[in-house]
Length: 390
Image (cartoon, rainbow, N blue to C red; front, side, top):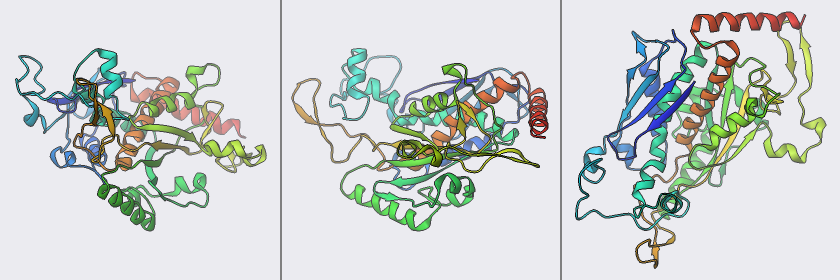
């Protein structure tokens, strides 16, 4: 299963095509729209979110609420297109009063993009490099989330820090799976602790007043996985590599940790590796989850826990210095309408990327033609695991 997106930030629409989806999977537009709304929400978002009210349109591959096994095309309209139609027209002559973007923003794709393509206008690059593209990803990932939910797998996320405000957890690897998604979603910073959420909002307010932007960290948690997804024999089979690559494909992600992550490098092995025991009811279990649900490139059956670090958004209301591409003189970087902080939204995008990788792992192991066969094969696998532990 794979997806491809198309569309510019201020173009008519964002489009996603999802291929390799098994037949017979129930799809809910309402569920996808809920995730699109979650991606748009959060304390610290900018004015663009007041314009866009993302709603998915499923154009193909689904009949009467079930997948056909053919490619699924999804579209999300850009409401702001009406204000940009002349400046972003696919054909015709550019308006005489068109203002090119010639002051690339530090931290964005602007400069490197125009150097790569030979363009003299950063807008040719920034329109596609914009995080607006992730709306199409979230729509596409809705298909993967439906597949995982059908197989008993739940994916959620929560924010652990924004700026200097950090969530204190006694044991994150044990605490994370026990959080209730509803408690997270009622928070506008998607943090399960209200005191920490207040501190996060304060950080965002300070940054807004200074014309600054803020990054932070969040965790993606997956419950209900079976052991043995992924592989150990080849590099491209390993779930660590697949998930990390998917997460690093999100704009602004600068770090990914599985389980204890970098902390494991400073501890002795006896405090890092998860001991194994046998339970008469549940089979092979781990007494801890420091590995974050992955071992040897495969899922262990414990909750998958991935922590991501997001850098501050490059667009600053108090711009950094740059060089004007026309005059080659020092200048202030351009200002696009932007957010102060988008960490809560980025966590939703990350959920989708992780879901897509895991959905593919299930299809690889249990079949990919139709959901009935997949469910049967999964049930057989679970039964074999039970028998192996007796």
